[in-house]
Image 1 (cartoon, protein in one colour):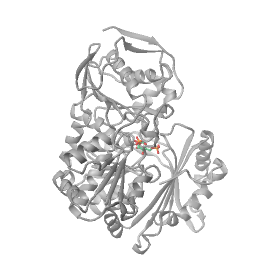
Image 2 (cartoon, helix red, strand yellow):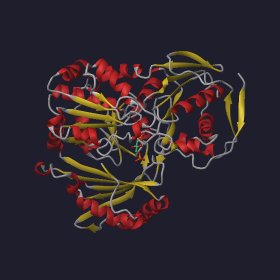
Image 3 (cartoon, rainbow, N blue to C red):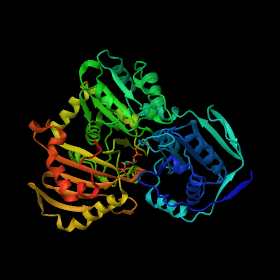
Image 4 (cartoon, helix red, strand yellow):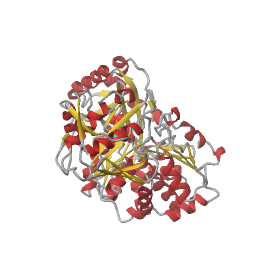
Length: 545
Ligand code: G16
């Protein structure tokens, strides 16, 4: 096998964000762009000779082309074997499960998650370590530095291979195993939950669920698990065929982009009692009860509070972790359980060391992600099965379970306002202005709200001591209310400003006040402090979730 060195030169901007490198497909299709980034990953690794790499993606446009390129480059980099999902498909949690089960050296996941796909949509690539989780910041920073000095990439002269049939092939001297993308993952989930009880629930005539795969990667996974293994009626999974452009939709399971599912459960007319959805690459989830969308932060708290009902977690939780902007609902559960609750920056990569060290069992984020130590990614179908297991044991509808949770712990009323595609310079200016005002904020009053403290969140990993700075501006108010400002690290066009709003309401008589109404004073404070309209020219957020 002859390794060919192809001269190249750096591209600006190949800096991984919250979760890998995400850019427009048109950017990735530039000659040498993908190759430069992959070579920078391989140059940052050491000891991969003869080792196993896992490779797959969410099936979006360009997935198939990128996989063939990466296979040739992996052979040139000296990998001994690549496990690739049939048709190049692996959901993000399934890739994590495969890396762990087969003790692979690492994995490359091709996904831009919930971002739109197609020739004008987004594409993405990230590297996961041998623990199955996203590479840490030290690694991604090293990859970025490498992209700035790259002068060539390595490949071999080999034809594309047929990825549609399971089996063993070769690319150069490297073995390629085309594996069933679902089998290892389904087996793992079956080991965590009470499948018999969930099957009994799904068989009940008075219980009907719908899972919306949003034309993205979870279709085959959900069909195999919910319909084939658990016996849910055919048709339970809708939009279940993965399409390269996700049917033109936005595979982000929130009330805006999964509006059809929410509408189907809005009243009793459809006969549905439970709904769920997942995103482009299968790591996010949305849980919907009748006339009730469960907020992701509440979902994490409910999962933690009900862990004793789940076979895998009945022995107890070591601890829980949430990203900083996620509501503090789970903190209250942790306090009641007497277990630690860790607060990390946004990005699943920060949970990895806590999970590896056995400090946390469940993790979650406001951005619709929950997961556990079974893999090192957030996991959409895992969350759905966890909810089904709770419903099966408690025999109550999802909304009642959440309302009872509020009765016991109080309600952390929560919402996120997104201003998408704003001018990057304006986004940076807004954050810099806020930063410069931080020293004056503590003690200030805005429309009756008292600011207790304000800072730019920084995190020291309790396991490896690594430090991450400037992870979002927090304004903490009386009685557990907060406003947090961040710029998204996953967008591909301009900047997305995220404003996270939270207010703690203990009084059960006020739990049903509509969320935006309950948060109105905080929305006013956010505008007054950050001057969003004046700086960005936007008077309303694009997405409220
Ligand atoms: C990624 C990360 C998550 C993060 C989310 C939102 O999710 O894995 O940890 O919460 O992005 O990040 P941002 O607010 O920076 O856009 P995914 O599902 O896109 O891979």
